[in-house]
Image (tube, rainbow, N blue to C red; front, top):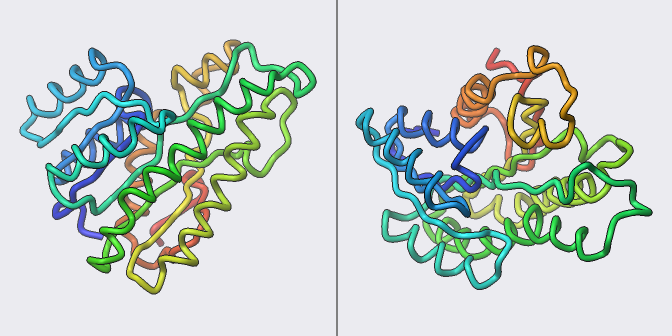
Length: 239
């Protein structure tokens, strides 16, 4: 995948991994559409990218809201047909994290709307154009919680496990139409979300979002990684 010739849309792009991906995509020559809920934070990232000569456009929308998704997709299309869609926005649910027995149904529903239903809606709005053009990549940011049962991570784990399978289903249905679909587990990173989940974690043991983003972009460039794959960023190697 030649990132220099793409128009990329990144959700959850105002901080952490999403910001790092947006910045590095722009640095690689991509036109980048950044999506986040908070316009002030988003504007700061857009300005930072533009100050280095990159092309960035900020859209303040909430992917968990059905009424936001189609206006978001329409506004993004004004930048250009989306070649790369990165579903990075995620929610842990209430913190401190709770046992399933203490998890309200409404809290589970809210996490699913952000981590699963939102990505489904946005892919549904954008993937049709990819299929018609017979080109495009959809990337789902997964988690090791999707394959491991960690106490108190129930709502988040369920959402990410379902997201992994959603990724495989999109791959099965869109593969013959030239659309590549991947899920990538970035590993544990020093982010606001990780600190909210595990405030006592030693930050020196955690990966930097910039380093993880660089590995993800290298993986996207590697056409040997087949559609439908779920890849752990820390163990992947271009060789």
